[in-house]
Length: 212
Image (cartoon, rainbow, N blue to C red):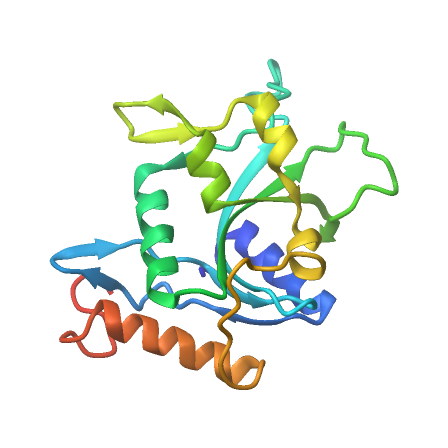
């Protein structure tokens, strides 16, 4: 994670306020898959229901576009590198973990939202909405957005159907294959991260090699 990124800082504030056990992944610790760098995830979160979540935070603004011509679209695009990186981390962590794209929308002052809407979060006087999609669901429904920039996205109707409040994954989600080892807690999550980085970069020491 990058604490200078306002979206990632806001999400960490949410996790702290909710009392979740989590690990913020150090952006300086780069991993490699063979000779190819692997994009880091941002957080590992232990949900209240026992779910273990690998989270890639995607900060977006709603509405988007310039103030003179706002776009009332729930942007959900990602890059091919995002997909490859999150899939690589999921393969390394193994069964018992769920990979998520967490879309964190910074709501503009003119946006009105129902008071009972789940996962509306105010951080540093800014209001956000949290919505998440599993990597499996995203890959199953994604469409090419820009071949030039290597981006993909979900059709609006599909996204509104499969995106859920982040709380769903921390309080109700059950990973299909449970394979948890050890005691649930910050130590175990940190050890899992260290093990995962070591398996992706077995010969590169702790700094992860070039790009750190």
